Amino acid sequence: MVFTGLTALIDPPRAAVPQAVLTCRGAGIQVVMVTGDHPITAAAIARQVNILDHDDITASDFAKQNGLSLESVIDQGPTEGGATAIVVAGSELLEMSDETLDKVIKFPHIVFARTSPEQKLQIVSAFQRRGEIVAVTGDGVNDSPA
Image 1 (cartoon, one colour):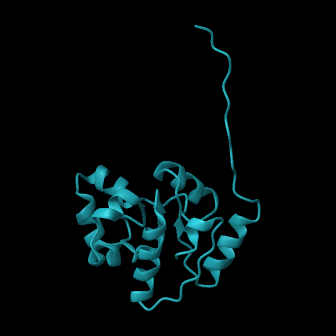
Image 2: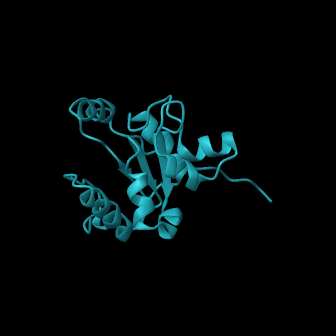
C-alpha cells in the first residue's frame, strides 16, 4: 500500500463578516447562524465571526460540566454564570417540540447546525411566533424556503 497524498479544503468566512456581525449586534439585531455544517465546525466559525462570543458557555457544555441534562439547561434558559449560548443540531431539532424551540430561541447567541431546508423554515417560524422580524440570507437553493 502506498500513500499518494492528502487534500484539504478551507472555506473561510469573508473578512468583512466579523465586523458586520458586531455592527448588527450593536444595532440590537440578533444574528443567528443556521448552517449545514457539523455543530463543532459551525460553533468554531460562529466564534470567528462574532455570532458566539469567545467567553460564551454553550448549553451543552454547561450541562456536561454540571451533570445536568440539556433539556434542564434549555428550560432554565440563558443565565449569568450559566449557559449564554446554544448550538442545536438538526437531529436534535427533529425531536424538539415547538415549546422547546421557543425556549431555545431565547438564548442571545444561537447556532443551528446540520439543518435541512424544512428546519430552516421551522426556525424562522419560531422567531416569527415570538413577534420578531426575520431576515434570511443564504447561498443556495436550500435557503429559499426560509
